[in-house]
Length: 144
Image (tube, rainbow, N blue to C red):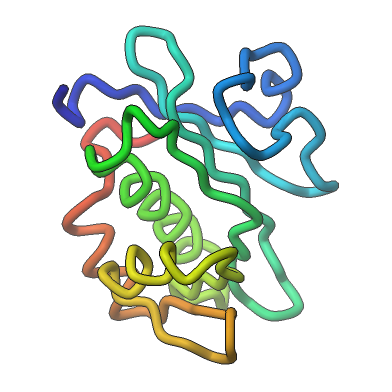
């Protein structure tokens, strides 16, 4: 499987009608103002990220990121995160900043690998430089 075979799309409204049964999180009821983006391989939903643009804190906040178990290790999570980082670069004043709260210690290593910094025990953030580097390496060639 090649990352070029993956299609990324905004699915905020469509999520209610997509098959999310292979995912751990309940993706059927996004938060108000949450934007949901999916990664598809051969029209099958294999990874999802949800984020909220926080205009008061000037960053994109990742609500959840999930890649189906059998598709982990292909760069899908990094590509979805790079999309959110790119969005944070074009929002006035956000400067590419992205924040999130980790669920487990195991996922922290994934975020640190992409350049995250710790702001408190489970809260991480990506600054401008980290976002630029991740975008350069992982942003999908065809965008969203």
